[in-house]
Length: 211
Image (cartoon, rainbow, N blue to C red; front, side):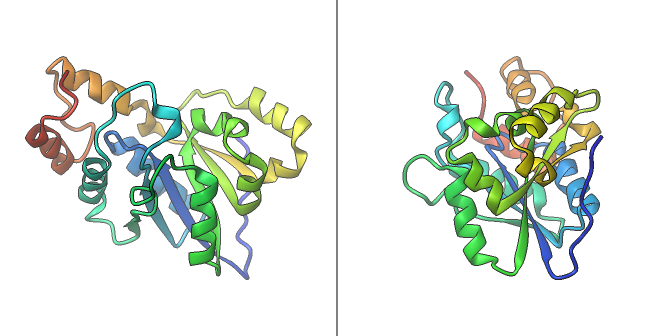
């Protein structure tokens, strides 16, 4: 697996963990912690999406509920932070807009955007992908056995200028998925130990993910 992340001495590194987090689970948390360690990130900021343009086909939990679940999940890690930057924005939220705002706010940092490998492979369908890749390096967190060869080969052929800015990170806990958790809740199956206990209790209290 290609990993090119020697730390430049004149920059601090900041991780940005974007996602719907519907709900957040241990896969997200382990990915953030592994990325923080492997890429020597000083902190990781979790940014729940507000109105994600790619999720229009299904109903998602309210942004405030998703924000609260992330807050509960990261409360015991002093190196994890949480931002409302997308939740408070009116209308669809695009990564390129968020990154511009983060770039202004953290001008002394080199940004590393952490996302799932599936979204990682679709980056050139995002709004202004070239602009996105000029602002930040990307870490694609993948479950074991994920084959990145085809994508990386295509990237090297078609966008060689961005090849060194995109990295894959294998995360065993990503066998857990938000989709599976929502399905388990609908089927009244146990989700204990798939996500932090305060998040599980929050889902139960608010009656989330039942049809």
